[in-house]
Length: 181
Ligand code: GLN
Image: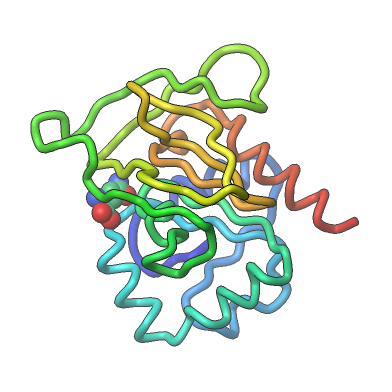
């Protein structure tokens, strides 16, 4: 869990509920033994500053190059984009849903999840404005891409860690198990 700033505790609770062992990453040495990384929501500016201060960018890129599964939610999605850590070939547009609708909930049909859509909580959420050919869009709201996958990296513009629907975290943990093989 990238634990520099933001809502990492809610993600930790979900992952523990699903039986995962969770370790907080604040400095590069914390990355030792990590099998997957969640980049939580929060403020991408504050997270970027922390990443810079702790010299985490290059070690995180190395982790991604090694094929380590990642799940970025909201500000975490922004951190994954070309203009931040550059771990996914996409460009996020910050605060993309405007001031009037700073926060809202919407059902998102996410490809790869069986059954019902996910109830997404959007809090000053970004959208995926552009992406390269290796990025697969998994879900959209009003025609705006809000969920994507590139290899074993998942990017979500919204939060699901606040509710009881654990399916996206399960998807991430399935990637973690698959990466062991
Ligand atoms: N608006 C925030 C940003 O630009 C993201 C909001 C969130 O993570 N809930 O970083």
